[in-house]
Length: 442
Image 1 (spheres, one colour):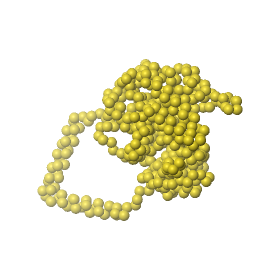
Image 2: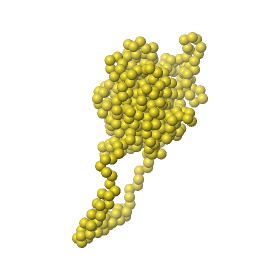
Image 3: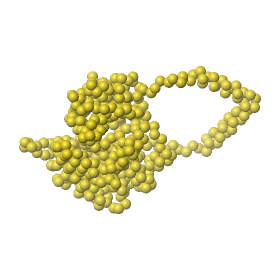
């Protein structure tokens, strides 16, 4: 059973043991999650509240602080224990605090909003329902922010108003609540889940052509219907095409008649010996056009595409590659254990078409960069669609494959800028080793 703030506490303890100054920030984050969990405990007993869940189990360390299901539908809540005064100005939230040397600092928090919004979109895509993204302010001066409001598509709610705000949200009618609860528990398991099970789940998520049991995903897509509300509020939705109308009965009769005619023709051909000649001719044609047994292997990203000597590591930690079916992972030794610090994955099919990061990369024409928090510290991810540029400049490399590259820069002792440069270098080096392939994202 997940415990609020568990993964943040574990990370804080690990950093504290290594003498890292960032341990305090992680401990404060865990305390913020506990404050938000206490507020959520005031919701009615029929609400489902899940704490510390993995967004991409077996693939990434990013965690969801809280998932809530109730009369307001599905709500993703991210706890932020930001110190100092917070204010909104020109559509952004700023954190105002004093530096150690005295001057006042004004720090925009747009990046955190982008991360929370992308997480809500990913949850909505996976379960097929509307998901509301919320940042719950859990700092000592959170109440000074004022009334809850939407910033960059994310609701900002002080923690002392969270439960009452959720109860007043427009009601969402959930047709199959039990199925939705089970799907959220299984799609986004606890951070305390057995690692072997997480690896198995990750293999399922990595395969973009995974076939779900009949009816499971379809039922989830139709499980929530929103009642009319006096005003529409910001939320993240998964668009669905209108269901096709049932074919008319006359069309069904026509198809049945044609089927009877075909059966009659086949019976006549078999009785007159014509069927055997037709089958023989078709078999000969197929044999002439069939490929040889020695087929060309599928050209995919691999560990051999990236030479670590060509990367901007500057004599950093020694990395050990490990091949994956659609890419490569690199790990390093730290405190007697192997820690995965870099991952390169090729994406095709449905993932390339619908993943929110690829959608944004396709619109901008260049790779999307997201800084998140994982089990081994801060991790930067570069998401690039085939045919787009890896970097912001016009001279940067163009990717030949749709891929994601994630670098746990904090664990490697790198800065965010260095980690981003490393991730982009991996994407550029790997792309240079392969011919372009048609993208399915358009």
